[in-house]
Image 1 (cartoon, rainbow, N blue to C red):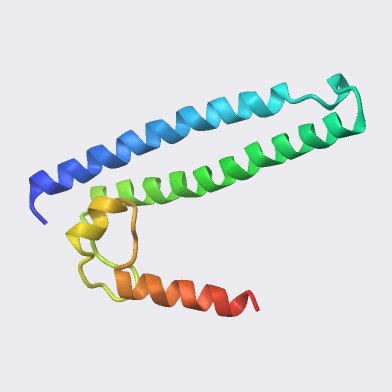
Image 2 (cartoon, rainbow, N blue to C red):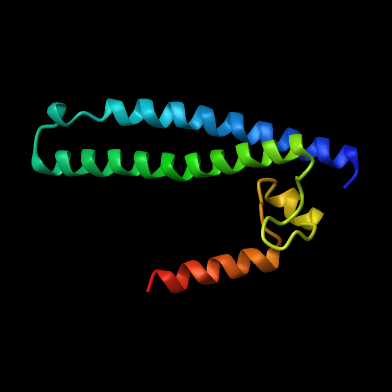
Length: 121
C-alpha cells in the first residue's frame, strides 16, 4: 500500500474515532436524562427503561468499533496495518476503504463469523 493511501485511511480512522467519541458523549448524556423517578405511570417507566437500554446497547457497539479503530491505528504505527491477523495476507484496498479498521481479509472474516455462529448454537 502506498504512503498516500495509508494516510487517507489513517485520516478516515481518526475521523471515525472522533465521530464515535462525540456520539458516546451524547448517548451517555441522553441515558442520564432518562430518569425513572421522573416518570408518572408504568407505561412511562417501561419506555424510560427501554430508552436507557437502547442508549447503552448503542454505546457498546460504538465502544467495540472504537477499540477496533485504536487497534488499527497501533498497527499503522508498527507498520503492520493492512495485513490479515490470521493468515498474514494483504487485506484488499477496497475492503480497507470501506472498513478501515478491518483486521482480517475477507476470507478469514467469513471464517471467524462462521465459527461465531456455530458457537452460538
